[in-house]
View 1: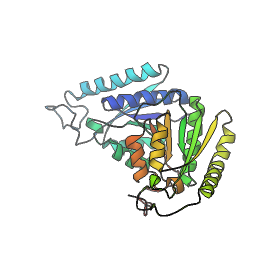
View 2: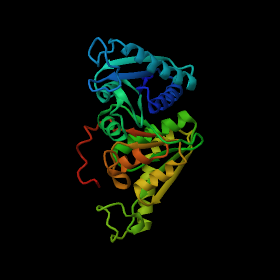
View 3: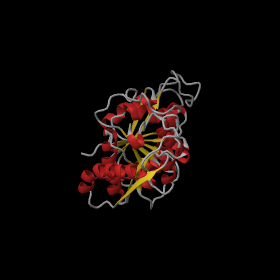
View 4: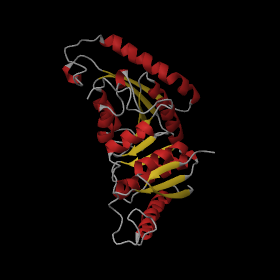
Length: 307
């Protein structure tokens, strides 16, 4: 049985956008959609004057708030995919912890780029950092204006994290009936592609060698998943340039950007580092972050990443 798609709900416009995206993802997977609303003690959206503590969903006025919030989410989900089965999950706890636990039995967790109330902590930095570091399934952050006719854009390097991202991107492209653009960025010594102290502009590189290396990385990463998804048309893009700028610019014409939780080489430091933060803040389309299944908490292994 296909694991459910989980979406964080708080009633904000961003979370409703996430519900719409999650409903579409559930429909193409043939999965149940779980609407998750969590109450933490610090929630500022609960009505005052209730008979119980403010984090108690049974308190006076809170049930009405919940029903309205979840009913609006269900309407959005049914507008996108009327055939999807929907379950409600109202939980007492910190939202990020609740979503992390939910990720253990989900195929995908979907969140908006900004939240309110019970999900006030679901800003780009905290949601991407926490769930990507500790979640047990891919995390989709809904942002930007995706091109529905555009490709799935995949950031490729030769790290274990990238292997999981490649498999996920091929599956998404197949489910969506979309092309897959696989991009590997090589930083050169030109001042135009200077990316920070770790990549000084006075260092020179053999651009022919870099391009050949990028081709080898792409060939190795795409061979296996490509054979399993012959229906997916793949466009390889070995490019020279700053990683974050290259991804952000390419995302303008994509319907989804897929990145690994951590990377190296062309995408060194990809998540919880400067590249991932730039992508999650500035990408022009939704971003799916895919964590390597065997990884521990992402707090380790980040030494030496660019700030």
